[in-house]
Amino acid sequence: MSAGHYGNESEVLRELIRERQLREEESQREIEWIRARLIEGERSGFTDQTPAEILQEIKNGLGWDDL
Image (cartoon, rainbow, N blue to C red):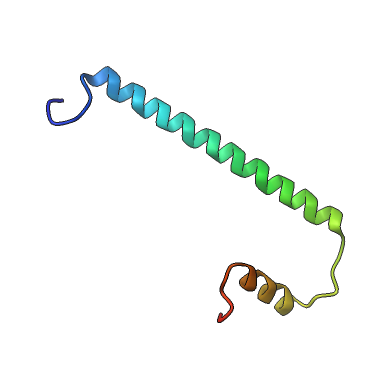
């Protein structure tokens, strides 16, 4: 432990637990965001765009105009 910034093993374990909890919270927020976007998409109805047009719109939104 002398090489690190933790005083003992217990501190290391607490830090690992905190990091894991934060990752789980972030994952849950991401899942909720995705679900909300899916619901939004379902409610918006159908489109007359071709798959190629949809793909181009996505690429343009991501700044991938040249792909």
